[in-house]
Amino acid sequence: MTSSTSISPARIVLTGFMGSGKSTVGPLIARRLGWRFTDVDSVIESEAGTTIAEIFASKGESAFRDLEYATIVRLISAEELVLALGGGAIERDGTRNMLLHSPGTLLVHLEVKLQTTLARCSGTEDVRPVLADQANLAARYQCRLPLYRTAHLNLCTDDLTPEQVAASVLQAAGLEAKQL
Image 1 (cartoon, rainbow, N blue to C red):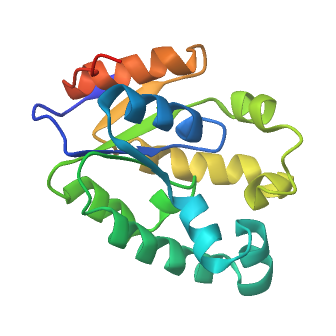
Image 2: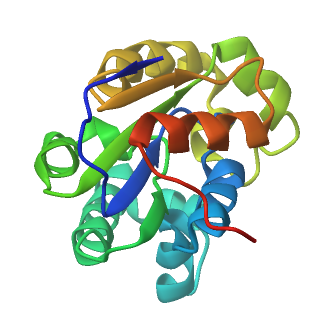
């Protein structure tokens, strides 16, 4: 685990490749802090009235990334928020730089090996456009990994339970869970 944070954040943003645990760990962190959890992909699907896979198929990845960026910009100003990004959000320079330099934002990379992704996400190819493209999956993983690692906090999650990951993020962020 590596961290470069010393001030308690106003929001925690989770990034990482698919299957890293963002959508599982995010609600655990939010519940422990008494904060709100938001999944960017869920917001996009709700507002677009369609799935991410359908947006990729009908408009292409570039149009989806534009929509994703606009959604993150709109959400990032909220405080007491745990935000889970889609796995590819970090690829766009503007998104990554905004998250790294937005005051009060702690960007956390939940790192997994590609084998872990494949094991955790098996059977979800119909809803995960990147996973369905097996020919380019390893290349995409290798391309994204150094970008993910620019996060304020990097945490290997392969062998941790979601509860252990949540506890590690809270500890590294210097935040204490509320008594439930």
